[in-house]
Image (tube, rainbow, N blue to C red; front, side, top):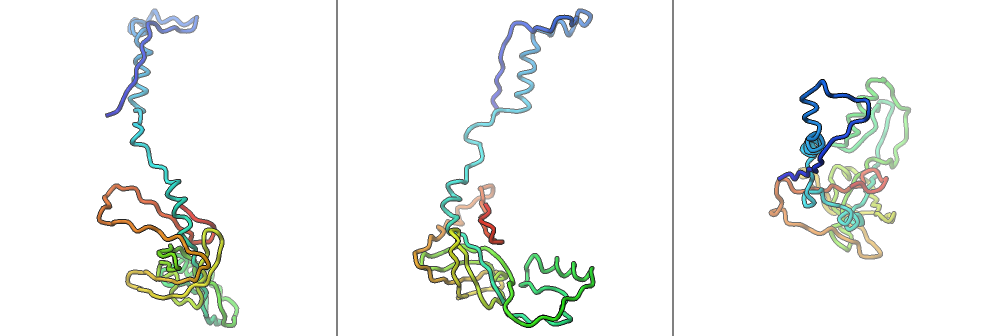
Length: 210
């Protein structure tokens, strides 16, 4: 229930020179205006109870950020004279964008030799202290090399140990010098519609986003 606060005053003072004698109704309402306006304002902006304020995610973010990683992959590709669109992993948000861009311009890149080229960036999270990491399959699809960067800027090469295109999930393995901080598993059966959900990621290597 919304709470309203009203204050009482016995009179309303107008600046000198203002004469409301010709407006009988306004003159009679002078002594009630302060109460009227205060209540009207508070009805438009009811006081928000302390227990209904949005939660603070600072502690949660501080605890989970070390478990969130950036994943960059490279891939061996052959680009010939007929190739007009940079190759991106299936499902990449940039695939359709660059395809339309090059088709509109009608440009064709010069012939290049094959070699390792950056292919994709994505996010992942640590699930075990000994180096297992979960990410999306489309991030590592077709990758010849996978590099994982942690929140403290430590970079490690990763091995793909499992992937499932149908669920778009993949599991990587790194060999850390120190135990990693894994995320804590929750109980999905206890999740209800309307619960707060926090998304944390580092898909572009610019620092974690909450």
